[in-house]
Image (cartoon, rainbow, N blue to C red; front, top):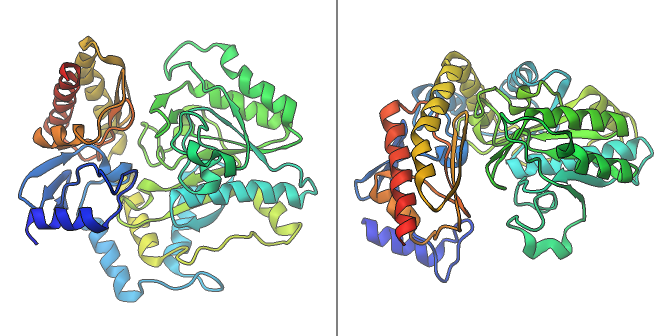
Length: 429
């Protein structure tokens, strides 16, 4: 198909995420991708500022990852994980236990980040059921959070400002504390934790676990908050006998400057969700890790088994490329790269503060955010970025980038320059 034929065919039959079939926002047909560049089917090239929704941390078409997945394909593409196992799964599980915070010893593989959250919630509820506390079925979380689009995950997303208010009537009700307002590097104030502490004290007999995104609230607002907050949350969970779940789907594997965001506060959870960058953007895969305490209680009480089992759990192709991606990350000098990206983002996005429509500018690790005073028009703004030769996909009032770690300084400057130009164009209307 030529470019326009392809686009028209897409519009007629494909329903894209967060899009209308009646008045769909623009889509751009991709022919190939390599490094940090996406080549469109009409020949244009775009520098990718999104790492394909934050997962392609090594860029596209990396020879090491290509080789890993090709080698595994020669052995087997898939085999069921019920009653069977294989070396890529075992080696990946060992690696995840090795690199994640201490105490996480059991690995449950899943299909996607949303499913990893579903698994974590089920683990928490089943844990308390096995301890003869079936009344502990609620979750405690913070406002402005985002944990996925499936029903269990939606139920712990912000019920007011989140994307899922349409479904509130059919979602289970949970407890929502005020979101922490102390900035990542700001002066700590104890009243920031009072809302969550009060809810925990009042409802701990009903609450199975606290779930939150440590340090960085992602799709709920791209807000970076003080690591001291998660230290206080850990203390509260211990005080009131609650499990602690960290959703590191967006922040895991170096995105914030630490391998996992909870390392900023030196806190270990009872359950951790991983996804996105796990396979370097090659395959859909996620993992939910649990402490020995959680795994042992579930396995010894009640039904004696954990009640979940995805068809494509521990897919060998995904396990193999995930192993290769983690090894590549460890050997890449990623901390120096990510710190360099943060420094450049802080310097080059600072000019956006002079624009009258800009509310805030912030950067942490390989995340840069410009918050404007009104929602951007997704039928218009993506085209403006493509005209600048970059791929940036805003949402709500946030114009942000989370580029691959392999981006160079000139490519990153093209992204930040485009953000300044597009933000200024929004001001002019």
